[in-house]
Length: 124
Image 1: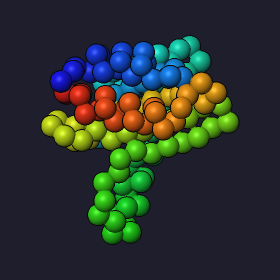
Image 2: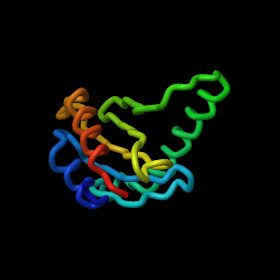
Image 3: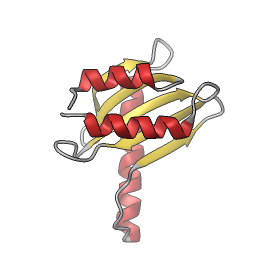
């Protein structure tokens, strides 16, 4: 098991094309930890905004009577992929990992696979 900082570092270092990563509490919208991003990309603002995305999807699933669990949500931009992965397991309830990828350098399938592995190792 790895702590938040270790998991965020691993995501940024090991996932090809990763430019930012955050662990977010979607009950509050607060980032519990961030790495990467930069002056032009505020991961704290992105964390709060993506909290709305997660909440909206959960509400929609409830209205539709869908019983499945969200694994991840993908948002594609013309130059980036934004991957939201809900954290399961011990202590993960109410959290998601948010990963920003440069789509010219990233392999989306591998990024999803690696983020799942990192999520499984995360101990909050």
